[in-house]
Image 1 (spheres, rainbow, N blue to C red):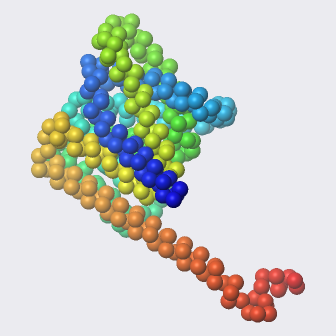
Image 2: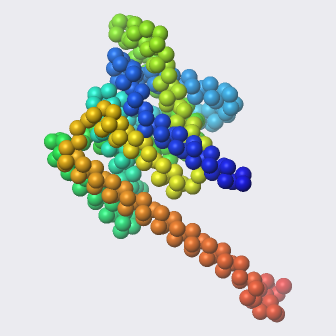
Image 3: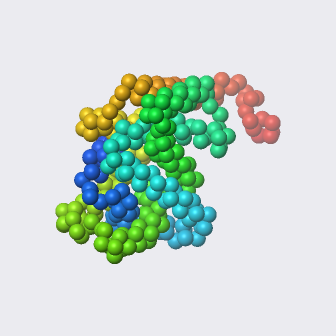
Length: 327
């Protein structure tokens, strides 16, 4: 019963995390007249404040001393911070400039880009279905390029930056809260410096746009940290395959908002491109579930064989591993 409750809590946390990420396009327009870079800088500053409070509450700060003594790891943290800055900044700009659908595409094709990077950078080998999925994804990008009259650079930049971020995070191997704390600490000084410079120029909206606007800018820290906390709770309670399926909730919500709420255009050629992307993701999901089921079945067979083996030994024990040692 306890296991069922844990899994239910994990599923709810996963829905909460990806649901919040999917609905966040509703939040960024509320921050106008702030520009994307100003919003990004506030997001960095207030995120550090939120995770700092969380670390103090949980008394999880022993890792800081260990991290400081590892220059290579610090370098990777700096790379992760730089890459996520590009991702965050472009996403905010996309939402506030009428490109929600194209931004959602970036997170749809992110799994395909991650797989391609695994092949090119890590020498991973793909199964035939995975090759078909990647090829279908490439065809989708070509169709969308024709539909947009240009390469879908917003989608590609978001997908490649987030895939690179995931690759670096894999090498850093830190917990979600600790990793976000380290990354926002790296970003804090330049972000705060930019906000102070903006204020000195008289262009900052934090004070000039009123207390309500200032509160919304400060809330960017909670908007950033809350889904990450929920994601962390889900990651330790539900299988990785389930988490992989839940990840599609965010771009589905974003896509739906782009069409139904922001009323962005979707001519036939874009529908065709998105349909190819969804076909590629369906193939990937089917292959992953089939492989996981096969692996589980093989493991069960091996376990059953191991349990039967002792009962199949001769009565004199001549097949015992100790027989050759004279025991």
